Amino acid sequence: MQHRQKDRKLYFNELSATSWKYFLPYIERYLPIEQGMNVLEIGCGDGGNLLPFSERGCEVVGVDLAECRINDAKRFFEEAGAKGRFIASDVFEMKGIEHHFDLIICHDVIEHIMDKASFLPKLRKFLRLGGVVFMSFPAWQMPFGGHQQICRSKFLSHLPWFHLLPEDVYAAILKAFHEKPGITDELLDIKQTRCTIELFEGLAAQHFAIRNRTLFFINPHYEIKFDLRPRLLWPRLARMRHVRNFFTTSCFYILE
Image (cartoon, rainbow, N blue to C red):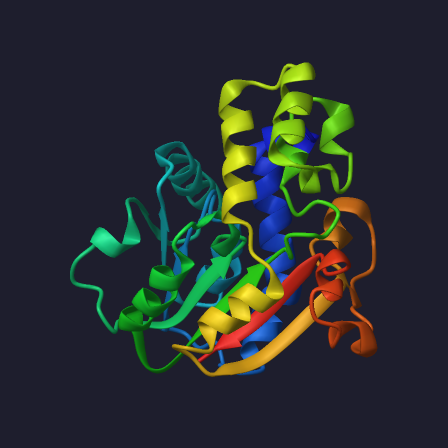
């Protein structure tokens, strides 16, 4: 397991830095971020993505199924002197937030969801008129699209593309390296719920207007993680259906 996966405060700080430098400016090209705006993040984890929006004066709400992550988010926000509301819940079971949010953030979430066809239209009921969704995810076939960086084995956590092996072979490798059952189950789940560019766009276009798509060859978050300068996918490659998934480390979308 890579160090940042274990040091949650470091992970929080890294995400907030990337959010300040890349997520917020990208979103603001399509939706000016103003004081008092209501912002929801689904699958907020430790809350790092929301910190810049809170510091800009937005009313932020983070929802995640993992109570331990929500507890971390509350603690990290308190330590930062920031305001935010964090809830351990299934967002679709929450009441009283219909058509409430100007912005919904779903960062590295859609690839964990099995029923994407139901998830996407449900987002619409939370948006105010004129609101937008910022969606980002790693293309499934990219080198670490299986999220293998969470492996406890240092070798496996740095091994690209092995998540594309047949499921039985993949599971056997994880077992041979003595990965814990919880991690193995999560990795095998992601193999089932994987998301390609073509799958996402086909589903999203049924319920939203895709206002922008930006495909990255080098994920903006890699700048703070690995000191690698972000780079866009080459335009010609970006137009090559299916092939582009192998080279796209992050996909950014604005949905209306």
